[in-house]
Length: 384
Ligand code: DAV
Image 1 (cartoon, rainbow, N blue to C red):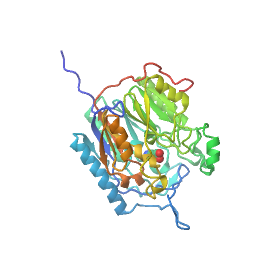
Image 2 (cartoon, protein in one colour):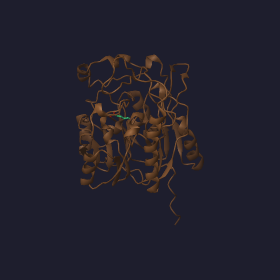
Image 3 (cartoon, protein in one colour):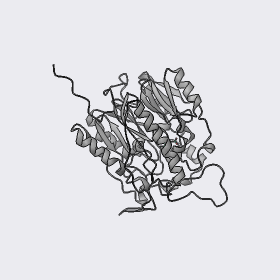
Image 4 (spheres, helix red, strand yellow):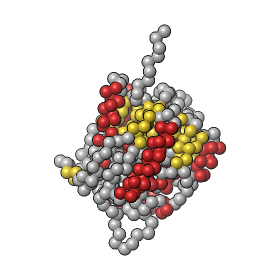
C-alpha cells in the first residue's frame, strides 16, 4: 500500500488542533491608528483638557515593550516545537493617496489574524475594512509566496479590495448615543454600508466544515455573502452570527472562542442571538462564559482600542493546551477546572497594537482534518 500523502504545508481546519506552524506579528514601525470614516480612536480613562488621540509613529519604547512580549511568545511556541515565522518590516508611517481615498498614515503588522486566514489548504486574504489597513497584507506576502511555491496543493486567494471611498462608510454611526444603539441593536448596521463586500479575517471562526462569521463594524452582509459563494463550492458551510448587545463589534475572537470540539468560550456581556445559540445546543455544543477580565475598560492601556475582553483572546496549541495572558487568573482557573493546561505569558504591552494572543498570530498548519461537528442540525433556522 502506498504511504499516505503528507498533509499540505498549509492546513488548518479549526482553532484547536495541535499547532505546527504559525506567524507571530511584530510591532516595528507601528503607527497610531488614524481617525478615518471607518474608525474613531479614543483615549481611555482620564484625559487632560484638549488632549486628542495621538497621530504618527508610536514611541520606540512602546514598540520595544510590545516586541519583547511578541518575541517571548515566538520563543515559547518554538520551545513547543512549533515553526514560527515573522512578517517583513514595512514603513507604516507612509501616507496613502489612492484613486479612491487618502489616509495620513498606516497601522502595524502586530495582528496577522485580522488580515489573513487559513481554511484547510487555502490561504485567504481579507478585503480589510479600514483605510490605514488597506495594504496590511504586504508584510505577509513573502511568507505566503514561500508556502505557495513549496507546495502545489496550497491555494492562495485575495478577496476583492473595496474602494474605501467616503460613500463606503456610514459616519452617522459614530454619533448614536448608547440608548439609540440599544434601540437599533437588531438592525446590525454599523459604520460600513452594504454596497461593497467587506470583511476582516478575524470576524471568522473555524470549526471544521462549518465557519461562523459575525456581522460587525468590520464585516458586512455582502462580505459574508462573498465568503459563502467562494467557500461553499469547496465543501465548507458559512454561517452568520450576531451578538446584538455588542454595540461596537469588531472581530469575533473576544466574543466567541471555540476551545475544542463541543466547547466555546463565550462572552457574558455579548450573548449570541437565541436562534443561533440553539443551533449550537442542538448539535451538543456547550457555551462556557469567560470570567470577568482582570481589569476594567478604563484600566486598559490608554491608547488601546480593544475592550477588556482581550482577556479571552486566547491561543490554543492543542485541544487541551491554551496560551492565556498572565494576569487572567480567573480564566486560568476556569480552564484548568475544565481539564486544560494553561500556559501564561505576559502580553499587556501588545494590547494597544490591536489585540492579544489570538489576534497577534496566524496559524498556518495544525495537524488534523476537516471534520463535521454539526451533524444533528446543519442550518441555523431562519438564518444563513
Ligand atoms: O472586544 O474589543 C477586539 C479585537 C481586536 N482584534 C473587542 C474586540
